[in-house]
Length: 172
Image 1 (cartoon, rainbow, N blue to C red):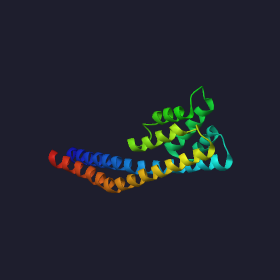
Image 2 (image 1 turned 45 degrees about the vertical axis):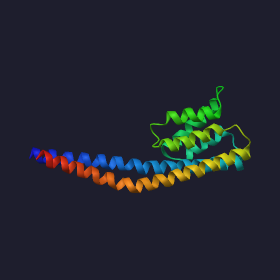
Image 3 (image 1 turned 90 degrees about the horizontal axis):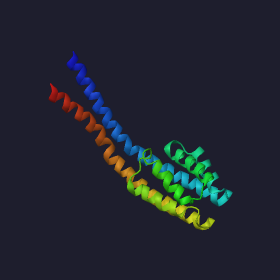
Image 4 (image 1 turned 135 degrees about the horizontal axis):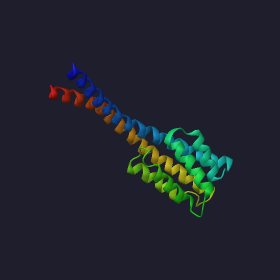
C-alpha cells in the first residue's frame, strides 16, 4: 500500500514538474504580447495625449496585468522620483530588477534594453519611431516564442509524465 502511494506521489510530482516547465513557454509569449500592448499604449499616450513619460508609464502599469504591469508601475514611480538619472538608466535598472519575474530571454531583453536607451532623449515624433521599431522587434521575438512554445510545450508535458512513470517502473 505504501509502495503504491509512493508511486502515485512520484508520478504526480513528475507530471506537475513537466506542466510547470511547459507553462514557462506560454508565459514568455504572453509577456511579450503584453509588452507590445504596453508599448502601443505608450505610443498613444505620447502621440495623442502628450502625457509626460512618468505619468504614461504609471497609467500603463494600471492597465496592463501581471509582471509587465508591475514593471511599468515601478518605472512610472521611479521616473517621478528622477534623482538625476536619465529615463534610459531608470528603464535599464527597472528591467534588471524585474528580471526574475519576467520570463524573457536574452534577445527579448536586448530589444527592451535598446529601446530603453532611446527613452526620453528625443522629440515626440522620433520617440514614436523608436516605439514602433521596438514593437516590430518584439513582434518578431513573440513569433519565435510562439513557435518555440508549440514545439516544446507538449514535449515537456509528456516528458514529465514519462519521467515519473519511468521512475515508478525502476523503483518496482
